[in-house]
Image (cartoon, rainbow, N blue to C red; front, side):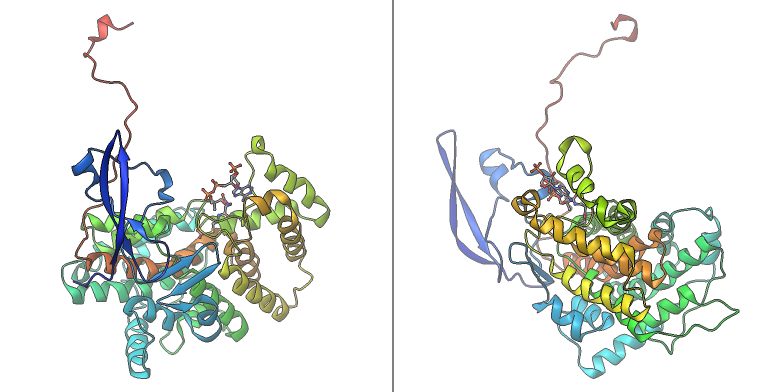
Length: 436
Ligand code: CMC
């Protein structure tokens, strides 16, 4: 069990129907204080109402910090831009999992463990063959990752620290293999086994793009871009999929089942599916001259259309990940000689137009990470259906770090929100023959 780092910071008084309730106020190391309402129901017979949890802290956490107004994102205190520039994905995984940047020896041991867990049970391949070839790879990911608990019985005891660690390493190591298999299955090519002499992202690129008939040459610019995409997506505090993983884990579910739940949540277009949606939107816009039409549609509430890749629940400023993403998008397009890519032109112009438009300014709608990641992933050779899979691959470390943290939290309880009930009050059962 880990110690709580929450500090008392005074109290707040809540007055309801003339009665006062003193509620403790709590402080972390950064970010807003929080009113502790844990005893509110007991003391006042009151619930709080916060659909979408916009003002609710579900947990104490020391993994990732976001200041949405200032556009700040830090993993364990390290700014995301520094990690994107100087670190690599596996080192960031270590940081997220263990709280500190590794020493050389720690890194070597971690790399060795991840590298030696990349293979999946051979029978898992037949699991893939049960899917239709046209299945969305995220559907395959949900199924196959959930199925891992049927294969690795020796790492599902969540009360055993060592088993939790083995499960964590297995998940980080096997996600690229499973993601590459989902890709290969969808394009009808043979699965490619991992290679231990390659780094994490090089190995993944090779598993995706090599074929038995041809050797695959690692391109360091492209690998660096994908590795950066992985760093940028690795964690994002208590977002929808992470909260899903925590909620699933709060019942004591095994780690593989929890991560499968996270994958299912991530799939939605308001969350991880947005990069796919953003690219489809850029394709639909097609040319720069059609931008005003789409911007007008996004501002028209009756259209039901939103500019994909714009806006964020937490960032009310430029998404700090979008800046690093934009740099990588240009690096990849330059390397591949695609700087005249029409979609990039549409994206750059759309960003300019939206950033000057009063509607987007007033509502603080800035480009988010998904705005440039779709263009980059497409240039790297991934079909749009794989975009969310890559997000899931990267976010697995965040999910697992948060899951581990939750299990080690002395205040951990099963997650169980309440509701304001507005249905019928008690009524008498009416026999079918007497119903109107
Ligand atoms: N285009 C046009 N209008 C928008 C957009 C948009 N992309 N996003 C929000 N709005 C408007 C919305 O209509 C609302 O207007 P009003 O106040 O007049 O009703 C206002 O801005 C606030 O929107 P909201 O839906 O209440 O805000 P939210 O915090 O619940 O939603 C969001 C955040 C990300 C779901 C939303 O901005 C959105 O749907 N964006 C497009 C999808 C997208 O790019 N998602 C990726 C998020 S980043 C990846 C990740 O971290 O998971």
